[in-house]
Amino acid sequence: MMNKLIRAVAIGLLLLPLFSMNSRAQSKSAEIEELKKQMDQIQQQNEAQLEELRDKIRTIESQKQADREKIEELEGKDTWWRNIELEYKKPGDGFRLKTKDGNFSLRTRLRTQFQFSINDTDEEDTATNFDIRRFRLVFDGNAFMPWLLYTVQLDADGGPVVLRDAYFDLAYNKQFVPRIGQYKVPYNREELTSSSELQLVERSVVNEEFSFARDIGSAIYGILGNNITYGAGIFNGNGRNANSLDSNLLYVGRLQFGCCGELKYGGSFPSSGDFKIEPNFGKKGQLLFTVGVAGLAFPGLDIANKTPDNDIDERFVEIFGEDADGDPFGEADVYGFTVDANLKYWVFSLEGEYDYRNINPDGGFDSVSDHGFRVQSGIFLVPQFIEVAGRFGYISYDDDISGRDSRYEITPGLNFYLSKSHNWKVQLSYSFIRDESTDDEQIDQNIFRAQFQAYF
Image (tube, rainbow, N blue to C red; front, side, top):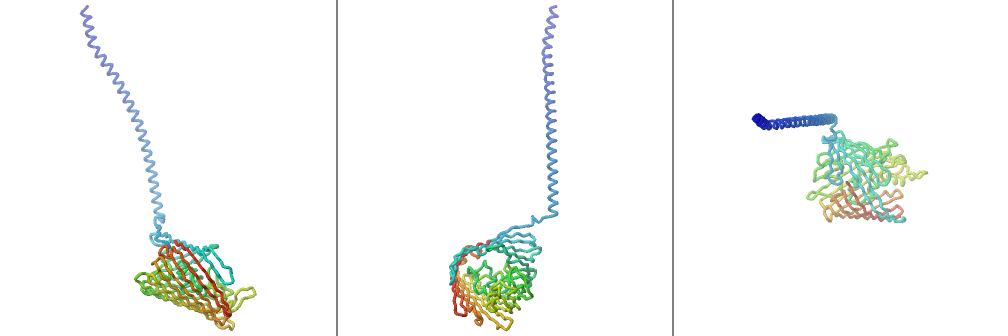
């Protein structure tokens, strides 16, 4: 009996570790199953997240493809915005938009002149005045072709905006360039000199009397070789922004010759490059010399119908008188002639101009001949910065007609070129002007002017 008991205990002791190991094995199996379940759950979550990421990638790629197709469609239809350039080189040259192929360009420029003046005229109150003398906005460039040029200039000098220039140049062949629109007639030199590049604050009394300024018409301009420019045109004869009320037209032609430099086409066509109509600023080491001659004919000018952009209506009043309403009247053939010369060398400049006008009235009146000349010069005290300048102008009226006998001016000036050019400058001038009548009456004017110009 005891032996059986001992044997059973021994067998129990031997089986006890087996039972323990089996229990641990079952526990590990359960833990493994749990871990497998967790792995399956993680894998399912990851697959869901991966699928969500794949959907996002597919959406982004689809949007990217749509954007690429839209860009390709736009590039295929319209690429103008890729073909435009913007440039600004220097003051006075303006901002320029242009296409790379050269078929379109637009340049904008703004010029302002602020002037202070004191005018002491005999038998009148002394006038002291601040003035926006000029406020100009200029657009120019080419359209459709590099040789189809256009220019538009607007004037807001002290009132409503007014059109000054609006014309086209067909500059395909520089020797023969048609121009149509409103612009300066190709006549006397001082008027053709831009108001932005005047050597003295204002133009002379000679220019006020003999120039024909701007008009509407058609002309032909050209450059012949390296030395000659010409211009000839037909105009309404009624000044700016005015229509012709009769069939009498103004005929004008100008020829200019220059030496010692090459003539180049430019913005002030028909005279540009080294021969640009600018009184001063010569080149160091190079003498520049130009001679110009021009003529005009205005058959049958009826001052009651047309008033050219000058003071000729006052001369008609002296010849014919006024009607009952105080308006000038009279009809006459008008002829004019002018010759000018300009010399520039580095710090020195000299310019002269002669003007002649003949008014041949109908109705038995004798013809009236008036003459004028102008001489002006300048020298730089500091090259391209400080310049002293002076001008003498004289008009001799035909004294067979009662009224004006002569008029002359003496104008010294001092200039400060802040940009070493005409773009930014300060100018001071004093003018003594005397008017003498045929009855020996004299009227004197003393005018002081100070002006600042900004051109950009």
